Amino acid sequence: MTTDFLIHLLLALLPVCCFLAALVYLDSYKLVPIRWVLSVIVLGCGAAALSYPVSIVWLDLVGIDFMAYTRYVAPAFEEALKALVIVVLLRHNRIGFLVDAAILGFAVGAGFAILENLYFLRIVPETQLGTWIVRGFGTAIMHGGATAIFAITTHTIVGQNRTIGKLAYLPGYFVAVIVHSVFNHFFFAPIINTLAVLLTLPLLLVIVFDRSEKAVSDWLGTGFDADTELLELINSGEFSSSKVGMYLNSLKEKFEGPIVADLLCYLRLHTELSIRAKGLLMLRESGFENKTGEETKAKLEELRYLEGSIGTTGRLAIKPFMAMSQKDLWKFYMLSG
Image 1 (cartoon, rainbow, N blue to C red):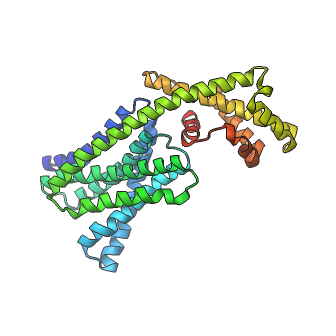
Image 2 (cartoon, rainbow, N blue to C red):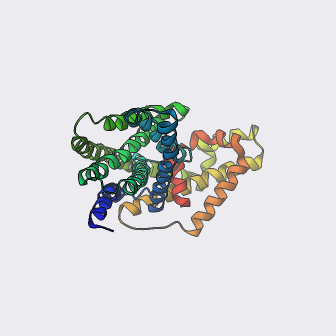
């Protein structure tokens, strides 16, 4: 391995990897486990691998001009492949906060850029140093940034309106495609495009991280107090006279007695696990590492059993007291990890 090739390799891979590592480090609550980040990078590499057969079809069989392809076709198709990973994560409630969206979105783009740059290193190893500076600090960071923008935008829209459906994906996707396409147009010199990416993306992510830190703090504060109050009410002898207790009592006309009992157990377990999840985040923010214990795992298993027992109708009946937002759904995956 020659010195020039080693320098090109470092320029191609190191900037985007360091940027991603910085994002993970800045996550003070450690919301995203490292294994998730690594897994998503691999999925990003997979998205890049899938893009090459399509590129060959467009360039060789369709006969589209290479410049037109890189400016219009590639951004739309590549951003769709990367966005698909984020859509799957969102639909499985793996993203709870904006900082999750930023890190996992950038990780997808980083994986895509890593494989893409390795491919170019193999086919054009003698490319000039300036090209690899642009590819490493510009193109690679752009890939990560575009997907992070899609993830942040989509997460925000879904969080504000969970019933919006697939339309929630369109605004972030269009923005990501436009960012990608504008970068590939090279309206200015490549080094200017690279500097623009390096100046704007960190500023955007700093704003996202600041908002997310405040959102996590607010969620921990108000949510912890509300959960604690509800759990104390359940464990006391006065639960039946509370609004929640009276509501559950009214369900006796619609459900059999055992189902109503399961609903109460489900509510209690849900509240206990919610407090546990928030406690873990508080410990992480203070620098302590506290893994999920066997007791918590057993409660998660019991919660899954109760979900099957009460059924969809039961979950809908108790929904007014569950506040099942993205954050609340996400915390159970954090506990099970």
